[in-house]
Image (tube, rainbow, N blue to C red; front, side, top):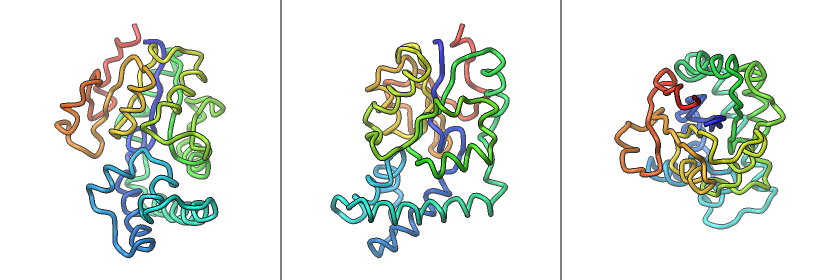
Length: 222
């Protein structure tokens, strides 16, 4: 393998609970009942705000509604992040792993369905420019299909100047894993940040499952 692409939420930043809490509150506001755990897993993680809002209201929303509700939810989410410093940090051993990749000149980027308002927040708060070329990060622009469509990983590989088969993807969501598979990614590693390792056991396209970045086999790049 020649390069690595990280999903961000639930992967480099274990914020699933923060997003879950924010979407539960907004689901209750939109449809008078919170999302269930099953709905969150199936319809939220790895999806765009438009996808999630469409599911919540049972029809395709207009752009104004997506923008208004999406921005409202994301502002609430960012506020929660800042109020919970014990949770607002990069994943276990992520910093050490990113330092290793950087020092060994291994091409890397981020491919996330987060919108720019959140990505900009992460870049500033986590000082991501220390490791990543910000121009190569792929985020939701409203034009890229949500996962499990492969587009985001195809774009990320292209930004690195690599063939998808020469890239490793780190993902936590089933929709993201499927997106990487459809993109023809060479190796897909699941990180069990929210779900137990057993959750991924039957996912045949995976090359490995980790619970901590210290467990990543660095020989994959040799």
